[in-house]
Image 1 (tube, rainbow, N blue to C red):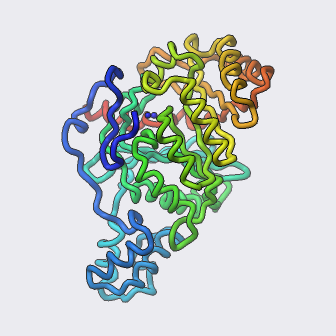
Image 2 (image 1 turned 90 degrees about the horizontal axis):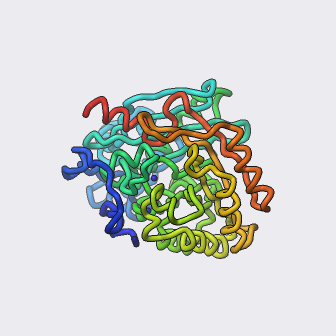
Image 3 (image 1 turned 90 degrees about the vertical axis):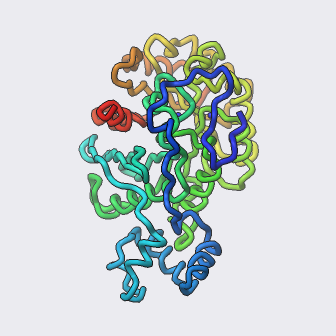
Length: 391
């Protein structure tokens, strides 16, 4: 989509000298903030909030059970709450955070991409993907992104604002409900995996993201009960955030969006590299493995005639081998191109050769599955399209 991140409630500012994208009008104005939501708080805070407003504290647990276990915010489904005042109670503590703007299906119905509007109108995206052995949701943590990676659709939008913890969790609730109701090919299914690989840089909205991770992993009524081992947090290389995550005591997987093994090219593709170069990012990734025992994924978007040369695969392998090989797994994937961009994906044979060179060098490698290309599947594309239409 990462400078030590600023205080989590503030948008991240790239370091001096980082090229900045054109700033949309929405990001020049103070963005609207969402209302407080039960999912923004932990269990004790929820009970106190209700008590402070004159409600019985145990109502917090009832509301949370409906939200996290029953996946609903519909008052008429909460029959354990008093009928008188029930709708007002739900509206106050489970306010509406996301409004569906559009929904597209692909891959024979096994992929659904959602465009959501937040409070104030900013747009975010999430993608629900069904596989034979799992159901995965890719979620956003920011509206837009401040990292300015030029090949990324989200990077062209600039940063509008951070999402709250509840806005992050609402994407999960809605997708889990969709999977449970059978909206994916194959019928009703349970959401099993969540990846923070949508719009935004998770380490630049750290507090809300880690709150979201803890609630996703907690058992109902504290959270959704999705194993922390099935949660992936991505970063384009904010080293302090990577080290901070390593010390959280959570067995989540870390994914690093590298895209180049050499600083000269990565400075262009991932401008934060000027603050945290390749070596520092890979050292932090190796420390993450040492602290957690979880193998780190290195994400590598292949761009035709830019970073797809076999010699770069060899250079990447050499960088990784300096730190061993047990700690890492590389996922090359052809770029999902942004409309009107000069950059595009290499042909499949080039992708295969790049992956084969990594494997020959002893690096665990899997070519990542491409989903939703026919529905602008790359993160930020629907939001960018909407921005152009309304610009």
